[in-house]
Image (cartoon, rainbow, N blue to C red; front, side, top):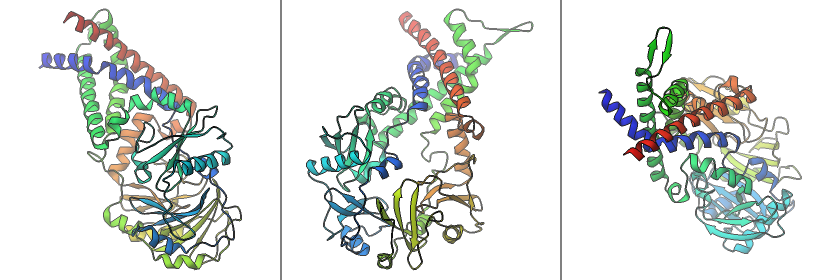
Length: 474
């Protein structure tokens, strides 16, 4: 039995030692440099202010023109080629012209270029030498599934000092992503390697999921076998603990014993990051629950909101369905909005958000035994953030199911059943050390992550040396 464990650990270790070293090294990079994205603050800052007094078609007519029968959100934005409605359903989005409902998708690279330049100017970036690089379904930075409803994407290089590249959706004409030279460089040394994220693999989500899940599982088996061997091979001489090995092997043994708890929990939680419903729930709404939250409303009632005033300098107006009603919110900046429900007066700041009563009406239709929603506080064990900084997030506890609702736009941020709450600790806490006590002391968390990943890297290097020597002997 022990011979089989030794043999398995030896050859799995040779196969995976480089992967272990890469994971620990890139983990440090990822802690400080996340994968590129367009933040909500950047998106809002890049929008052109809406023109008041324009003649626009009714929201209901825009929904009909889009052909999206399950529409739950409609946004009015201004592009360089005029105002458009962006209609969104469960799985797709489409833009129609706000004047006549004609298709407003972007076909011409010249139009995409002007949209990107306008976005850059609004954010005080320099687009003087901008050029369209390509129109792609995928590239290295647009592979996440969240962009599926916007593909293909025009990739526009601003050619500015930061090497900024922005991505314009051909379906909606919106800027949906930006990257800089620094972000791309650090992420090649971080996320791309850590997640095994080459475009050709990641563009096929199912294949990527199976490949990385399998590799992570084999790595976990190798680490577990090593931990068993390391503990079994401990020698006691009186009150002293010693190792039977010499040279690089003793380093590997001793460092492995010191790092056993971290290495095992980190590799286990890394494998669980690829769980995707295999062992734990995915935190997604059930079909019945989704039928309540994503029910398409009677869009004709949106007409009653047309005469109400919005912020004079609104950059975006959104109509969304919530609990069967239609709400309209006007976005002025990242932290300011107005909110009004069809048939009532506007809720100005600071009450421009859904109320506890609004949220409770919805959640009582989602599940039985729902208590009064409570506002999440900083440091909650299961944190969730509103899309608008400072806006309340309400948690409704319905038996063993919890629903976190964003009061700014009515979206369900989290569905936490017992399985998903356990996953938060087994994956997120163990892998990123986002324990509430460490989140309250970010400098300490930084030191722990750097120190532990460095320890894991040194441990992996000893394995690389031993593996290389074994291969040379073979």
